[in-house]
Image (cartoon, rainbow, N blue to C red):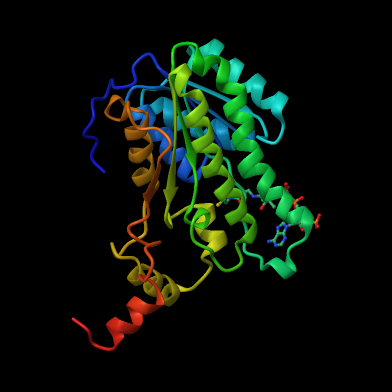
Length: 272
Ligand code: COA
């Protein structure tokens, strides 16, 4: 997508992105880098982060990367402190690290449920809490990466739905509490984003499966990591200075009620 906002929009500002080494979160990191931000990323795999760092530096960004599991508060606090020391105060935070897989509730162990809630929900709280000191020292923004599962039940997604609904609730509580520190808190709920690990895990299917899936989305296509990156840039930008406590759904209309089986049945019945 063409960048329409200034290339120096975030010049001198630092964004910290959990899970920023790949997938949607790397798309977010690239979008911030193209708009002049200093970019810090963390994740569990250092090699992945280092490869991402090279790509972000090629876009002209100053980059910090470090291994930290969002479930480990002390590691995350250290990462956010380290990023702030190298790149300057973290004024924008994107809580993107997530874990997911398809499993029906009767096949899911308590430990599997807990893993996803720990990564998505506790991990998001950990990041926001660890970044608070820097975010509140002059104001800033937090953007949580939510999902359609937060507000629509999906088959085999009880764990992710519970976790992401919690993330959106946390987002609104922080908007309520931290507005007085100049911190805005919002979330982006991506639809199916092509080329990501999430898609590979949650939509495993052949060409026909994907053709039908695409056709079921009102906009007729999967999203790209940049669709989400641009939304995250918007929410952190001066265009959104009075927006807080909001979930921005970026899904091509996929989660609209009635756009699923009913739509395809009505269409196949020949309705114009
Ligand atoms: N179906 C059912 N249960 C599963 C599962 C699956 N596909 N994958 C893992 N689990 C269960 C494990 O069996 C285990 O439970 P148990 O102790 O009762 O056996 C539990 O989840 C923890 O598994 P483990 O592999 O030790 O967790 P982890 O902390 O190393 O990994 C996950 C976390 C499970 C979320 C893993 O999928 C992951 O690391 N994902 C990150 C990447 C990702 O999901 N990206 C897409 C985001 S949309």
